[in-house]
Length: 504
Image (cartoon, rainbow, N blue to C red; front, side, top):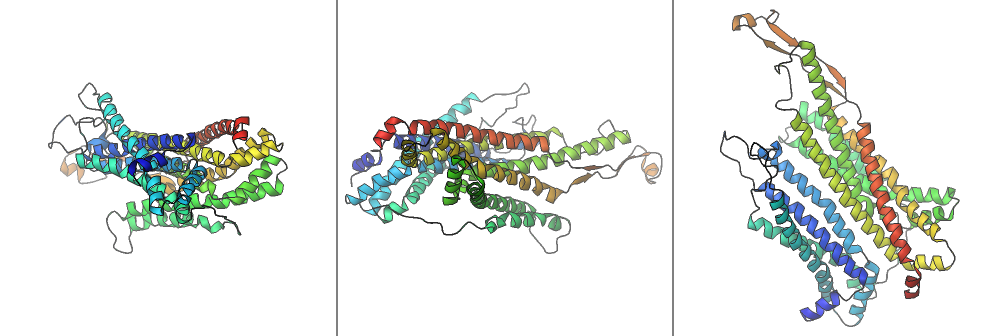
């Protein structure tokens, strides 16, 4: 097959195929920007010792030991973008499967079908990656600002190495092409592309077992931090924390299948309206659809809840130290403190919250694409229901029940478990150490009971659960879900129009 013929076959689809290519390019552009930003932070080189002022206003960029955390956060920020790309590639999958199955029936080999699928997704992702590189360079020039002291707000004075740029430009389209080929494995195996999947048993509750395992792993951190029973590496605590959070996230994502099945069963048993009954049957027929569509959104909620819990610990500790210094009369900065400016810690968590917010928006965009894909895939069925006399309001209500029923309990579980993880490691109360300062000579300070010593009393404070912040996180997630649902309902109205019925 000639390359020109392969490209014509790859882009010989309908408006849905063109929309899929555009969304794939957009997600690839966002992923490229996130990865190029991580490469930019990695390209920062330490300045000469003792130089002042430091090049950037944020200590997260000035401190070499903190930059790996920023790089990791930027790479993790690309995960919702990759999830968005995966959802975009699935858009209009049934029609694309039929088109490529027809190509296979016309004599194309499985390898040629793979190349057609790879060309469709890979070229769209390559165009998006190049556009993302151009947008990154424009943003770098636009955001090159300094404060009155001459420090830059962002590392706009450095560029990633050519090797890093080439790796990003090649890796994103290659990953998209591999995902596109993987999603067409049934069409590649058989040209008919017809499979019948029957669920003979319900998902089990033990699919959420990784939640318990993740909490137990996180509970081991204080043991190995205070009195390790076995010799462990120095950074074992960080490894256990990351592993525990990942296991908890996987448990919540997998457990959503059981939540969806249970919710569907309850709707079928106790529902009285046609919309609830239809949604219940759909949830029981495919309970794992919630795990696929809500994965990135639930992961962002877990990380956001963990960040809020850790931030509340630092806020409580700072407040306890300030109270201890006030009781001791140490108002000149000579009392106990975390070291350095306390606003540094709060600003760091503010950046984490911004990253979580961006992740939630990207995950909501992926949810909208997934919802659109489901509506497009079921438009013939819903058109048949509409033609049979089912009101459009009933079909829209079924879509709302199907989306919100597993979503609300899954988000509540994510918020609860995410908040409990830092409380498991850091505890539920903060105790400031008893510290003293001496204003006399060495001989006068030899006796700690002398009046030259000023002692900071010990203060114990309970760490409150950040309910307002958690409510804001959960409410924002629900608002994004509702926006995606409203957009999906608007698309459903056009998908079940008279013209679409005639086309079907």
